[in-house]
Image (tube, rainbow, N blue to C red; front, side, top):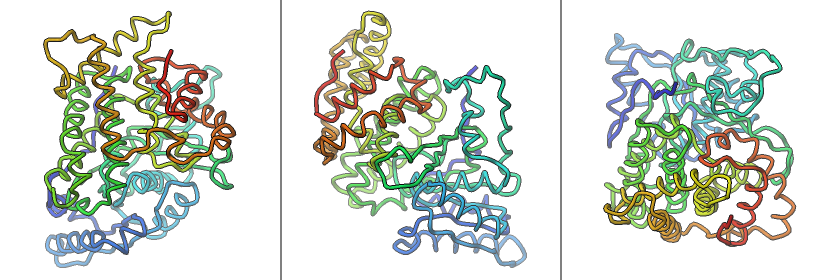
Length: 438
């Protein structure tokens, strides 16, 4: 059995934040979780408070809305999650709104879990990847008891409002907490990915007005993140009739509008809006199909080296495509299937003639060349070495990167099942700007 689950309501288009307030007018106490930049350098948090207060005042006998802002959610570390939870627990809201990028929204989801059930152990919930067991390789045959995932939305509903165009976190059942201390670049840092449908937000508000002034580097990084979501959702072992159409539509929007948004920014509001929409559509696709090793390995680079997740995936994406479509003697049928899927994406983007055979190597090659061109257009580094990582540092970190990637649940939904040596070779080729060869 598969599923297709999304938030109860998704508002989109410019100005949708104001429209969505009608659905939130009856809540009495709202806690807004955001980052320092959004709180101090943009008008959006105050605009949200004003809009929500006005609707509440009009529809509740002129009573005032109680609100509080926690603006320290820069990341989803264990420290940040616990600090935010303490604030939320003290304020006792019936509505929690996350406003920010992917990390801010992930942190808020985890704060929400602890608010609903203060006894919840996030690390334990991560160990079982609860509610999506078919996506996890963890062996529970020993009979270890699984703790039931907290019922969300009892004390408070969660609304997510993205201020970047890439993560899709506003519509997914995923969140990851980083635990461990010490400086970046050591194995004390560990990712605790949690996946459960209860984590899917109550509402998502996709208002392009919030991303019009997004800097070019963040536009590129977030856009590459969304691009990786579309490609890996389409090629996941759990891709299906529902998610395929969403992945292809998001892919097409990104092809035509991401370079425009990157080069012209707010001067091209249509491109900004299309990319923002594509990010959410891609989020719905990968939330319901899973992802692959580009994400597993990208997560490792992000955790150990603090490389922005979109850049990390961009550094790896071309070699992952080559890996998935290469032809080891034991899985020629699988590699042919992958070539067919990449060729289908190439035809959908108009990169090849529709009359060509869908499994043609030409289509897969055309798709790969398009990814390379997109990376170049967005100034995404071609290799880890070009990004600035020293060779000695890479060699010292390689085994740690492999271990973190191997433990990541996305390994299990990759179209071609990898072994550790495969991950090691992809990392190495991606460092030296070499093309993967089987």
